[in-house]
Length: 298
Image (cartoon, rainbow, N blue to C red; front, side, top):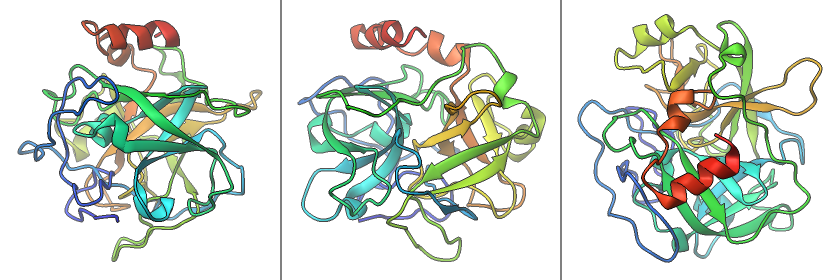
């Protein structure tokens, strides 16, 4: 079941637990993470759909992942966040999607376009996940988490990540694409069964700062225009670009937060995957965090 949070746009839908959790580090199944707590005052709650977009062709974005709560019913009803496959056994998502969750109570489906189509894609259990060490104390910033699957995904090419420290792919005016199964209607809840995507323009850091005074350009990038945006249910999903001369898309952001959906003067804010600051501080005191950093070369 999806619960929308209309007043702000932190784009996850955690079933009946719609409040944003704030846990700094969670490691491993079957342990239970600290219970989720309400978002601190001043912190945008995170919810997202694809506004103004179009349906993705079958198998169009195979690296796309859906985070599901385990249980009965369709995957469409159990999906609460998005993510992306960045190597055969690792999912990249937003910290606010998994903070307060329990690894053993989640599963991930990769390579599925229509959520209710159980014959498409590959389902994996969650072995462990790690949330950025600075997420709990930073409000909306450092909104990134890495999930280890219990078994590698086979036959699907992971999405590429940019070189840390470069801003070549997030220059203002460039078009990027965001995808997800989130809400598609700003006036009422309408969550599609089929994956959708929309192209959004990248904005300059000063423009983002105008919309969000606490915006942190060291770890974030923002994108969107009136009528085109991510929304409730899209949290954790990828913002990506395809570079001329290269066939494979490169993920430049993770759906994080924003005010409303597709509203004038309120672009979507994304965790920047090219941020050196983001990866240098990911989880320096955690064995699991160090393992992820070494594995990804971050």
